[in-house]
Image (cartoon, rainbow, N blue to C red; front, side, top):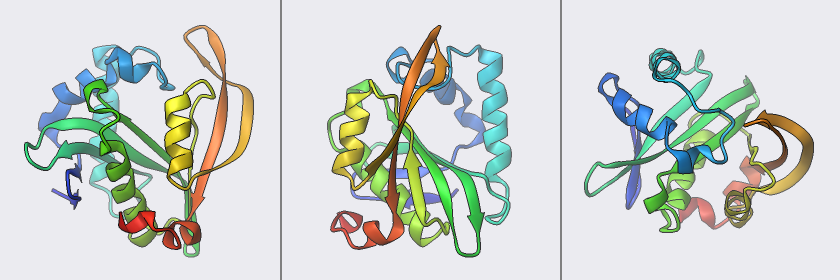
Amino acid sequence: MYKIVGKRVFLRQIEHNDFLTFLMLKQDKFINKYMYWPDKSDDEVNTEFNNLLQEINKNDTEKITYDYFVCLVNTNEIIGFVSIKTIFKNEYGGLGDIGYFLRESYCHHGYAKESINLLINNAFNSFGFHKLSAFPFTENKNSITFLERNYFNKEAVLEQEAYINNEWKNVSIYSVYKNTWQNSNYQNA
């Protein structure tokens, strides 16, 4: 099993026996408040889970997504999820869409910062990306503040971009570049 280890959290790939945890996270009301997916049935989550398992088994040149559970180092408890979806990639670099969420009781304790730090370092230094972007809803002030504090810059706002729960949502685009990240103090935090 592939792990990316930090001081308080580690990122690990999803395994076959993780379905119930994945289902719990995907159906959590707090997590779903700002996500692009509507409430999903057990069957829909099962299909998504099996697709993630297939992706994990691909070699790095074929990979489209890099998906990890966020776990506590001391207890191995799964507290969230982080991922990068490849938008474009070639021998010169790549652009990835970064996503993240934590269970509510683990927010505002620095776990998100550490897990994103681990993911971004690997994205730039191991996975070959040169730019990562996040796409939070404009109403998700906590996520926007988090991104701004972690070297992501606002690039645009897309009006009425996502139709979620019978409502059009505006989406912000925030990005960080490899050279900016490598010149920051954050990559070694």
